[in-house]
View 1: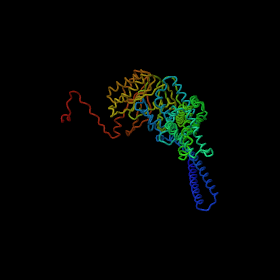
View 2: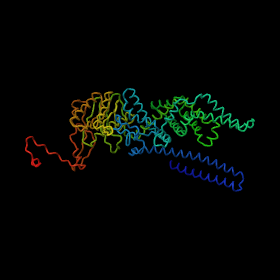
View 3: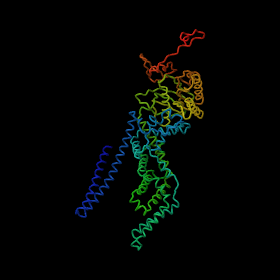
View 4: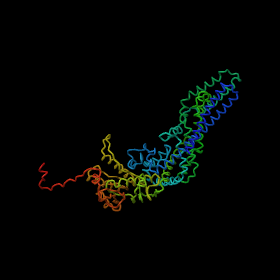
Length: 612
């Protein structure tokens, strides 16, 4: 389709060039050769043909752009399936914040992030809505019954759009035509105008002036001589028009500039709204959204079409001939500003609601596309009590051929897993799998598991920690700040889903063990649930002090005869009984010489000691 459109566009472009050449040749022949006068009719016919070719070329070019946008929509899905999604342009970098409860630890934004995998939005409103569900709103979800109900409705909406591929394609294709800039189009300047007040004083009087003066100018220009008026009478009327227009230009320009050159984008927005209105949606959330599109009393597509026609008239002033010879006579800018003000007064208060609906539909469509591309994922069962119970849980950002899954049960508040294991065995990946799937479920998307039962939780993590030379913050103190954020959140509400990786590993083993136990006890006492990974096997004692609430699990490595290590990344019960740190040091080429045992008290010094 794209290649065919490109071929047609080249052919039509060549025909346009040939017509131009033919017009020039024919005019030259009329001037320099004794061609009859009716040859000018041939020039006019060629000019009409050229105008027709311009219109046809524009339509073919638009069809080519639309076909290319549709191809990009499907290619994006193929890239996700092929594992090439990390090269997609939309990464959500602008949504990263250093103090977020979990976003950086769980790779929610940035390259190779969950947002990059999911995002199929084409507008700023859609992008921000999706980012909100994956970050702040996902973090706050589930605090009340109303929140849980809203989450179930969103999940139903995602499921409704999952198999509506044609609708999602149309929404994304038309949205892609809004602009080719690196950033997605932002309608906020247009919204600021739509929701603002009128800068025109005495609009009723101006409407009379905007009609009366141009009518008088046309009358004088057309019939001034017949009426016995002097030849310069029209110049006086037009001069008055120019004077009035210049006096109020400071008030009309902000109105016309707010929408000028937006005809194409407004037409694309109108088509996106039309796609929503025409689709026979069934999910209650989606049906309510469609109703919001009629808040002004008229169909949004009709209102946007009206505005698009008005903007087309506004942009006519960009033609130099029109701008200098016709617009002053018709007081074009003033009339356009008055028409725009009437549209804004009637409809402006509804515009933000329209774009909110569009952003919501785009975000839901992004999650629906993910659901369509991942038929092996399952829809989480949403319950009313904090709980996390998963069967065959995996990490959605890891390719299916490499992914290892595990069963995980956190039966309710005050429950935790203590995860031990050797280096590189899968502890951190397990914690991230828990967190990312919780975020997906709280956003309304399917999860990477055969089954997930999830209650109202708020995700909070302490995993990746870095120091700051600029702020004079050590790595250990930075970790304490993250841990305090988790504890404070747990103190403010029950059901915090905490994920702590290598807790307090920046201090000595004795204090680390005491501090880690204290933090976990505090989180459990406050109604939290979650998982803690550690190398300190002593934390496993919490299982005995919290029977039925804390469970020890571990990963381990397998060592071959040639001292080569492999990992199966499978979760096992109990505390790990092996360690591989020294073996890994040897593998990477660091010689490890174990210290000789210290001599007993009162023993005679060795020969080497005496030599020293």
